[in-house]
Length: 467
Image (tube, rainbow, N blue to C red; front, side):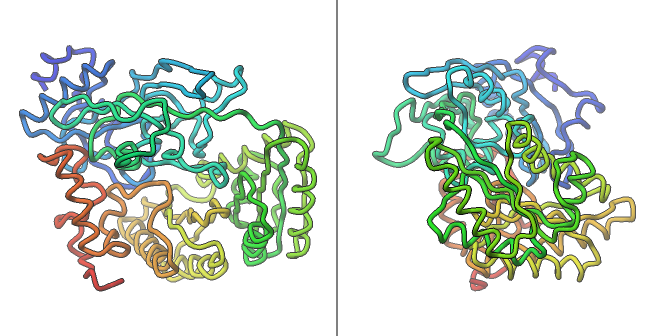
């Protein structure tokens, strides 16, 4: 602590008990207290801190806004949490080249707001975009509702500045879209802070679509809503977003946001198409017809920007609305082929019932990215969380067996690192570890994340032959 103060000054270091408690959690369910918190104001600060931690073998854990959902910002092995809250400047808006250069603490939505007068926006839009930071988005390779047609964070980052664990500052990529050689920028995007600390990001900006059409369709059952998703894509239509929620989620959202969702529907789809104005009404009409062919009980088209915002406010506020149903929730992030949605959603419901817990579903149906919210009450004892985690493991196992993945956008972190052998053989994990060892030889960058650790994963000692 004293060494950090001497290095960076007292205004950039937090160490009191009360201060540290604020940094022991993120949006997931696990907690751990850091030994200190540093708030750097420049790349030079971050480099100096990394050198200090390297010399003293102290772990470093990067933190954006703390909205992550896999424990990525939790200092599971202690050490220093590096909060990028003070590195939150938009350094450059390059309109002719459709690029922006930002510091990692810039809030996602703030960038789109800043470039909107130029007719541009930043596409990846996590539901937490009013709070989450671009540094966190890069760490987790975040997605969002509108990445179905446009891709996730890695598709919109062309350059990064990184501080390695020994304090070395490295620049990768730039404003040009580089395709030659190894994709080192892509290696860092989604690496969850385990390879280095990102201190500057160059992102693609996208022209705002000329117009949009947004519709909400209600179905008697989730099966019918799920089958509609596959039918829309099979018809050659790729909307910018297809979101789904079940009745339990819709009821909570409607009570919180008053978005206009019907309370008696078994499943609800929120579909949006955007682009040149010509052809949008035709695409909307085709989607509406497909919905009705699959037994939609109601199809409502937003007729104004206000109506569109209300519909999206419901979806973006869904996780927060779960507080109306339960004091706590444990959210999973599995991915499955779209055609398996009906089967896996039934399994999700059954897993909740087996563990005596309710499950609400709100997810990116277009790319098969499930977000089952397993509701529990930690006040009733530790068994509640353990049952929620057991249900979550069943769900992720089913996702992998269906040909999917254990995470789509929330990351592995410390929440799913024990489950990595469900999807990857030991040789796969060894190859990933060699990348980690090459860039972070002492293992100080966000330790205890992504890779299974013997201390925490003993009970999940899956053999590589499980695949």
